[in-house]
Length: 284
View 1 (cartoon, helix red, strand yellow):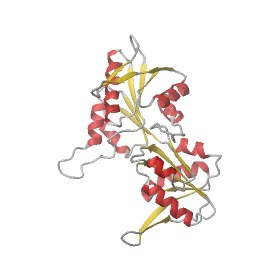
View 2 (tube, one colour; view 1 turned 45 degrees about the horizontal axis):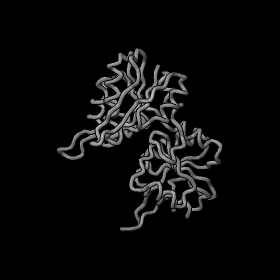
View 3 (cartoon, rainbow, N blue to C red; view 1 turned 90 degrees about the horizontal axis):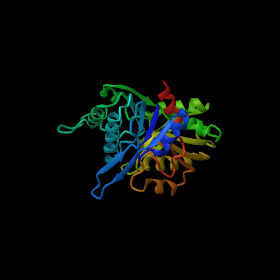
View 4 (cartoon, rainbow, N blue to C red; view 1 turned 90 degrees about the vertical axis):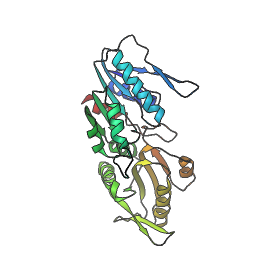
């Protein structure tokens, strides 16, 4: 097996290759002045099982993944597995208004043209994978998050809403601590109350877990109200740190006690590695 790291996921790709104890090749990728992508794999042939690690967000990383697939095919790869740590366009998984595309399905159809297997991480909706015609697997980051916080004194794991309650349960169960979800109650046109559905957070070290943080507004509001309710500390961990509109700076400027995300997207707070979980899926 050979692991090829695209430009958006080099550190994660190196970690996966290390876990698998296999060869690692870094793609040579540059951008032309007009923004177009040029990529190359510095090998005469690739007559092995090839794993390409590359995000498909933003758009230029999607193009690079498609080009790397073509290169692997041309260099006679025995099989091609795509590992997509963060799958762009996954949130548009159905048509909401007439005239819209089913974006997630479109991406699956394009990416799957030359792939034998696709592995994603905490996909927005796992059902999206059904649009691929090849073998697929969605890796869950809960194990990596729980392992990271195992010795950090967490007393209560929370999800920001009931829709993500399963994630809090998974992480909390692995840590052997209480878990719950937050409820939002609108008190007026401008005031919203956010509090645990069942758990008492007084005097506890709370960890909020979510699949993605974009602007961070919900997390900042939740932190404030958990602190007002008596929480000793509040940290947040997500799988995908998208962090738009200076979200990291806003989160760091709040009273949160810790901001962490997995290395599906590489940034200054991506301290939690999912390399071991992905390597396990590749071995299977």
